[in-house]
Amino acid sequence: MATGSLVSIQEYLTTSYRPDCDYVDGVVLERNLGEFDHARLQMAVSGYFYARQKQWGIVVVPEQRVQVAPTRFRVPDVCVITDEGQPDQIFRKPPLICIEIMSKDDRFSEMRERVDDYLKFGVPYVWILDAAKRRAWRCTTDGMHEVTELRTQKPDTVVPLTALFD
Image (cartoon, rainbow, N blue to C red; front, top):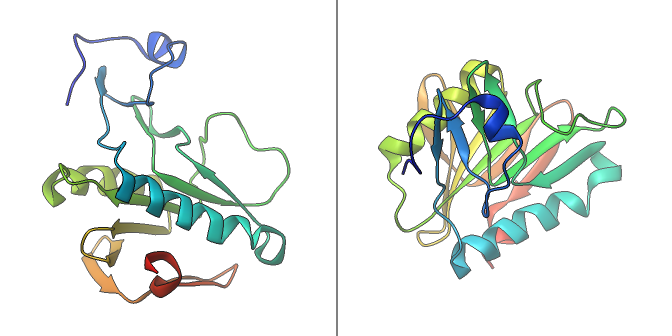
């Protein structure tokens, strides 16, 4: 949902939103979150990756601003990057993984625009998780494909859904 009139990128970048908002072509968009199922799953995903950061050579961060296009900033629920030293404060190169967690008010049609932004930007792994239905999808340019584990290559990572939903 939009939070008002058009704002400049500079105004967006220098304003604190609680929770943080997306910025799409001059419009500040609120994100659906804040309920237990969403927060718990976000913590489970972050915790799983965090516990394996050194082993997998990654860094995991929740709610990180990602500039996916010159006038578009998205804030995925969880981002994973390869550990290449000190990252920029705002990600301007594609993360390894962007994860979105469905909230009860989210719709797949709206989520698709976010996913398309990540894919066009070059994010190789985009996943959608649904805490209520205990399901997950890997998103590609060919569509959304339901999966039973979250897997990447280079680095090789595997996250069984049972580890997140139990």
